[in-house]
Amino acid sequence: MNIVILAAGQGKRMYSACPKVLHPLAGKPLLGHVLETARQLRPARLVVVHGHGGDAVRRAFPDADILWALQSEQLGTGHALAQALPLLDAALPTLVLYGDVPLVEKTTLERLLRQSGEGMGLLTVDLARPQGYGRIVRDAQGKVRGIVEEKDATDAERNITEINTGILLLPRAVLGQWLADLKNENAQGEYYLTDVVARAASDGVRISTAHPDAAWEVEGVNDQRQLAALERVHQSRLAERLMLQGVHLADPARIDIRGTLVCGRDVRIDVGCVFSGEVHLEDGVEVGPYCVLCDARIAAGARLAAFTHIDGARVGANGVVGPYARLRPGTELAAGAHVGNFVEIKNSRIGENSKANHLTYIGDAEIGARVNVGAGVITCNYDGANKFKTDIEDDVFVGSGSQLVAPVRVGKGATIGAGTTLTRDAPADALTVTRARPNVIADWKRPVKKTAK
Ligand code: UD1
Ligand code: CA
Image: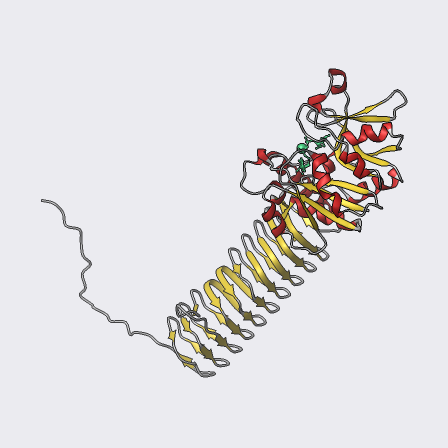
């Protein structure tokens, strides 16, 4: 089949410079969700009709399997589909989707395809409040006669509760002629794609209807309120899926997944966490409240305490990180490593059972096993122009408040005295310390505040 995704609308009610279909849901543009579902149906042709913000939309999806049809003026859904016509395989039926209806399920579309057979298929739904939608008009036998838009409907037609979701399957061959014959003599002066339904009925084409399992599947995004509502629907479904796999969520209403989250057994996730990119939490991992993880792998048994930020990093088995720790891209903690509060690590490897527990910056460093990095230690990896590496071998003790001016190496078993500014390599097993001697002024008097007489 052909699939055409209509995505040329402006999205006026978003009040945004960003084209509507590029607004993110679960971290992915609305159109991205529709494309993903469309691809699962393996269409022979996949066409996106774009218009408003067209270049931005195209640039956001450089994928080679997408054919782009430009609708430079938005003259209606029928006109939109007509722009895609030259790109379609005329021998195949055409499924029409909307770029701003992101959550329609593959199984629902498959049902529509199955029930339509060689004929036309409409995805419809019964709504208690059908306002704003096109209504499905049926005859006394219950056969579909056409679709009437709200603005063109009579009072009686407005009482119809079965609405057009907009998603439909058009049979092969006839499509081109139907589109060519559309007129725009209606309340909105638009070429309505929905008018092909009455045409099909009078041509004696079989018209079937199928329905989604849930109404949210066919809800569109017209404003920020609807976008937020669909985001919640989507997130609660992701949360449900995790819980059914055995993941413990402190509150399924307070988790956000904007990518892929893969969890092992006995994973526990506290409230307020945000996961993006690809995150793996292996068996027994515990994530504390308000952690933000992006492209991370957390090995079995590790614990992340509250407010930990991890981006492009790995935590080793049984590691302990946070609270308030920040692991930036290229950070790898080996098994049993501990990283404590207000510690930032970038592009560094920390060996097994090493610890950096308080107020430290480690950048571009290779740290061995069983190293203790004291409070307030800083690797000075940047001279304002270039970055340099710090090597710390196994069993080193770096005293608090030290600065390691890279490039520099600390030999195995060395001790760096507190407050050292290390500007050359420190030999193994020795104490290296730079320290100004304290001066004692015994009869020193503290200044006192002058009092006015
Ligand atoms: C349309 C249907 C209506 C249905 C409703 C479901 C028509 C005439 N009406 O109405 O029966 O109940 O959707 O939400 O089809 N678009 C273009 N180019 C255009 C016009 C629209 O690409 O010239 C795209 C929009 O970006 C959007 C979709 O088509 O993704 C629907 O357009 P919209 O203006 O929202 O249609 P409605 O008037 O809501
Ligand atoms: Ca709409």
